[in-house]
Image (cartoon, rainbow, N blue to C red):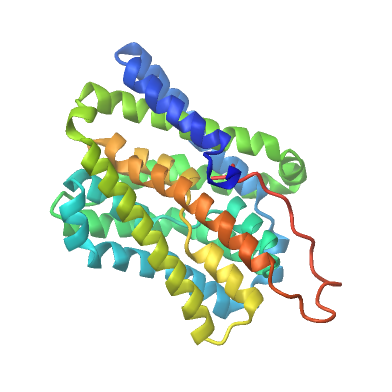
Amino acid sequence: MRRFLPDGFTLSLIATVILASLLPCQGVAARIFDVLTDVAIALLFFLHGAKLSREAVVSGMTNWRLHLTVLASTFVLFPLLGLLLRPLLGSLVSPDLYLGILFLCTLPSTVQSSIAFTSIARGNVPAAIVSASASSLLGIFITPLLVGLIIAGSGRGGLSLHAVGAIVVQLFIPFVAGQVAQRWIGHGVRRRAALLSFVDRGSILLVVYTAFSAAVLQGLWHQLPWPVLAGLLVVNAVLLALALLATRYGARALGFTKDDEITIVFCGSKKSLASGVPMAKVLFAGHPLGLIVLPIMLFHQIQLMTCAVLARRYALRPTPLGAGLAREPAAPTDGLKP
């Protein structure tokens, strides 16, 4: 039953929400936390830029059909599902939560956990590295564009020039700076994975605390009754189930090998909490941020538990004769990576 229990990071998220509910930051403290959050987000994308190996990207770019399939699932299939399920979603969740679900559908795939689950399931790990990294990088550009189209389509305004400028300053410039600095610090950053994990989780917890503090002061828990929260859980579960089914049977229909199918399933069905929460802070200024990020927080835990079970089931399949000699050994994962 351990695999169904929340991991340490999820417990930290729950504790942060409870802290924000009991002791919300406001006034001068809120402004200080906003500055700290901006610095943490910039540092996060700088370190991701320094970590992303150009050699790994070049070595895996040849399997372009697989990468296009993953990107199509991430940035086409998910947004279409979010829009097509609107009749169901509208009856289960509030308008702000529905906007958060649409934002979830525009996010890039995870990097660490996609690769880890692919490795556990004995899939195509080099291709997973390229697909997940490309999704994370392209998400800096594609997610804001999709968000702008969705918000404009919902009648709640469009993507402002201020938001575009904030994306460039807080996300893109630090990422490019990290890529430039990679030749000097890239090896050290990759060796110190704990540092990147600390910045990953620290920036998320800071954004969650400030977002939920503001939401609590605006009466969040009066606007979010238990039936609505239960409806949100159902919506997240349905989205993940549809994505898993579409990627699995879509990969088979397109003639991919079992190894490539595994990569498509784990890279094409997941959404990044590490990218989503910082982006939400930049993109949704003036919106109730607590309600916007709540769907991705819940989806994060559901996808980790579901993919952990699925990866173990894939790993139990028979190994073709002679295939185990050249395969990279499965890397252990604690399921904590966002």
